[in-house]
Amino acid sequence: MEGLFKEMETKVLDSSLTISDSFYEGNEVSQKMGRILKTIINVLRSNPNKYDKLRGELEAPYEKMSRVHNKYYQKLGGKLGSGEYIAKDVEEIDDEEFMKTFDGVSAHALTSLQISIGGLNKLMESPFPDSNKFADRVRFAHWITLLSVYNENDRNNVIKIISKYDVNMS
Image (cartoon, rainbow, N blue to C red):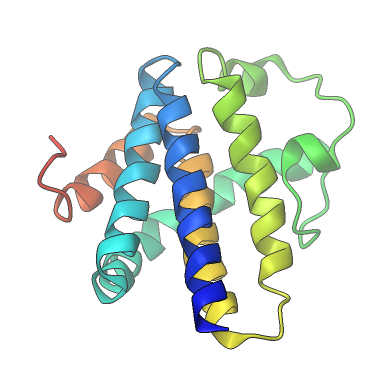
């Protein structure tokens, strides 16, 4: 069973890095989202304890960015607690300001990220505690990446925090 879990873990992390690479096809905001996801996933892959420390530092910005996301989500008709993302839970988005937020962000990466969040939610329902913990860690990386689309200051704050964990960040 351990070998199966490691194989699944590798595939999920590789998939996350593929999504992060897709963000580089977009504008500067999209590329920063790619940097965020890539760095967090690489930290998780290299040292889960270091990841846990990073996550602790990201909790406050995550909570702040979640409030912005939830405000939009409710304004567009989404229901908090559904566990879904905007494009899945809201049939039609008729808010120009909201849609401008995503101008230039890689549509492929954004869609892949949101789909993966749904898959990670399902993985967290598994009867195996290790896979639940792993899925939660990856899901957090995906969510904070998604939430970073809304506000430049919040995005830059996340990059500042994660840069301490990645010597390749500038």
